[in-house]
Image (cartoon, rainbow, N blue to C red; front, side):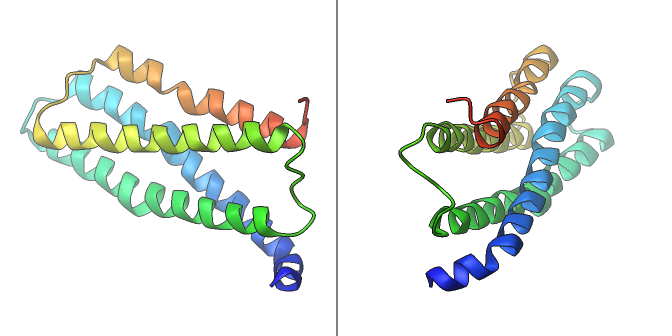
Length: 150
């Protein structure tokens, strides 16, 4: 199995990066949709239905599969011999960032359910603030992997 993972390494890494890019695009865009939804749309209007459809499809058709494939290819990279040295700090900071990014994904899914049920209580300002979370986590993850300052 280790030989197969080593041979597949360039493909696994490529597919991991592609998956992460798709996931991040959704994590950047979905909270922005929520800002426009809460600030510009009347409940049970045509626009409300349109926003809910866009939010649902972004979350379930793009973000969900991208998150799952990011995890699968990421775990395959972790299992590839010689890729990770767990005695260093960077894999742990990256892992913490990925777990936090997954939490944020789930938080976004919860807010979509709130919109669908008519229970959204958050303001556009709050969604704007939360929209910064994936950027901060992206910085932690990329710096951990590329610069390895820790």
